[in-house]
Image (cartoon, rainbow, N blue to C red; front, side, top):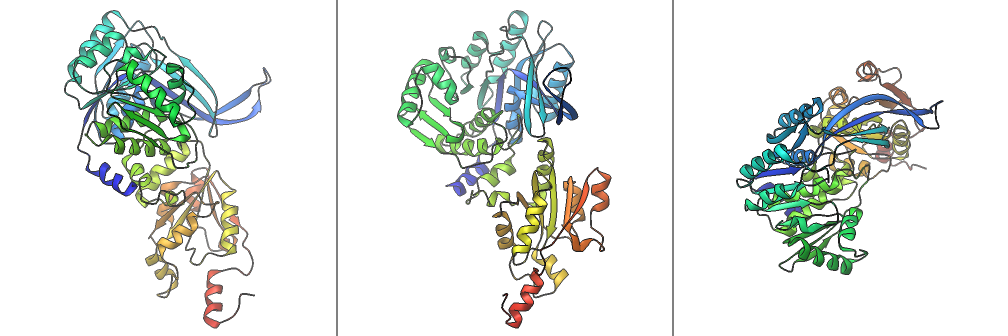
Length: 485
């Protein structure tokens, strides 16, 4: 199934998508919370870094841009510094911002999240959620109506912050373009004319007063939403239980999710509707578009905060073998982005490298020790050619693909990155780990990458080895016909 979806993604024609809704500036303050304030029984966050991201409708825009779509954004920001920052961030990302209206009467919406390591400990919001009116609404209606007719599809990202007014929505429906709505509130009649609506389970229960606990109750809730919103498609996102989709044409199906490590569900709905828009807009069959969206949601919950799913990540997630182990194997051209994402989550990266030709107990113990030095462990794995250069023409005994699969199957290993250089220096520079781990036998050899890691505030750890265990020793005993015992 997933192999076919790769062809669907690869073959989908380009699309132009409009995104209208509540544009939000997300600020992430990350650091350590190792002490309690003497002023009150609350943790003190020692901020180490801060990051601005596009949130709300802006996150939908970011997801669509990451998928290679041509996107314009419509919404309202304040006539303030944050509004200028948000608008410029959209423009810099590649979006058309001609329908982003500055309104001096309201502030730019901002959500500030305080994060200790990868755990969010507090969020505070600055916002005015009164409906946009007057001159700002008139200008927004005019701008979105002008652009919507030239789109393949328009996404309405309603965060109930006042931008999606009746006049704005009517202007979009009047364009004749298919409208996909990520709804809020309980009155879905105000979305009448939408092609599709995509509530989550809690939102669908609140809007229909149907308790959803199986496919039969999902079907009842969907039928109500079809009638109330007059929507062609009702798609209910169910978190770890996947996505349920119903069409007025009578098509109904439940796509189950693959098991994934979940760091943060923030923005998962944005990713789903962005993927749905990208492929529905390209006239991909609805069932295929929903299945791709489900895979994308499984990827984005492994990231911290509002985040986008790239085409590279989507292709990896759509591999024919979507098991957890195979997803740990990372291509060399993906590793810099992976490391950046891990650091953005506040995770401590440990790195080690080696040939790992014929895994044995010494390797398992060593890798467990390396993993204990960080929150995630990335293993650089010599490819076959580099092993032959290091150890001679008869090595490796186990080919790269099999060695990578065996390493990825170990619980201690989070990611495996094959490399072909003589040393891992370049790979270490791309990752810049917090901790570089090598065996204690490297104490007098000089650890490759030490200077780079330490100059960037990291450390080198030499792990003790299990006596009497080595691949070379195993090979010699096998060749000599000597038993391990």
